[in-house]
Image 1: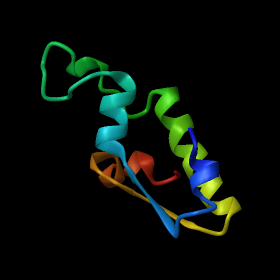
Image 2 (image 1 turned 90 degrees about the vertical axis):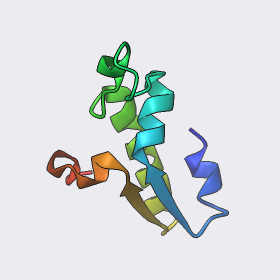
Image 3 (image 1 turned 120 degrees about the vertical axis):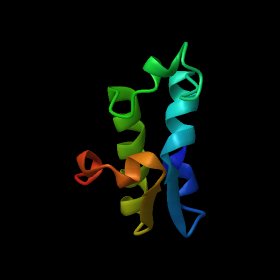
Length: 78
């Protein structure tokens, strides 16, 4: 949410998608009672990822992605 502010101060961004998804969706992917809520392509997750990438690029900074989502071919366009 504050990526635009951080982008002025940092050299790069590394988006940890596992923690981002788990904390945004309030769903532990290892807890079978709530694992169904762990949704990598939920619009809120995609918007947060885009916000970080856009903020980084606006300041000429690199943004990378790590975590399970980074290894998913569906995430390549991001």
